[in-house]
Length: 227
Image 1 (cartoon, one colour):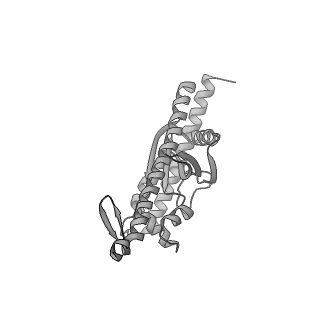
Image 2: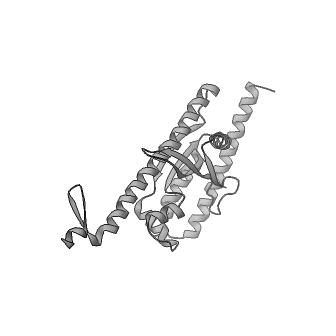
Image 3: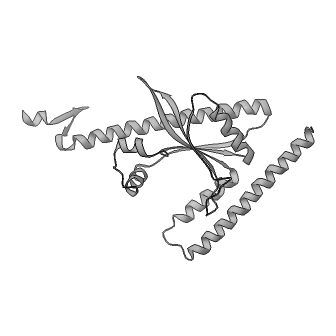
């Protein structure tokens, strides 16, 4: 009788008492990942609606592509452990802002700021933090515009604010960042200082190209619609 008290039953599966906490954490983690996934869909839909509206108004889509991702469990655990934090569901919620990620790829640099501003004007979006790595690139040349936001998600029995990281990049910035990521995580790199110097040089060339393309676009628009 005592053995039955120290067990729980779910879907006809008996879980021993020693494993109950682990099982409950696993179920809570599964639910949390579902909630983050829903938050991503909310944010993605908002950007798709913005892009469709601007396409009709301006006959141009400022957003070229939208990418989404949920951080992998091992990446979540590694990040918490690296910070010396407890590896638990409550710790994920309290300490990590980038479990759910949305990347918005724009054609031009000025599109990034315009789309980000339109997005933040929506009255249900709460801005938590901004990091502008376009105006202030990282030492390795990384450029992107980051926002941490809270977005409301309506579930079956409640409304829940969910945290999402939104990154804005041009096509060129995203190309550079993707290749830099692949190179950075190679197990062995000969002459890493030389590689990093070359990556920084490539980033500078890409940034210059982005600015030149943006200025060319402005000249074309001005010629079509002079003030």
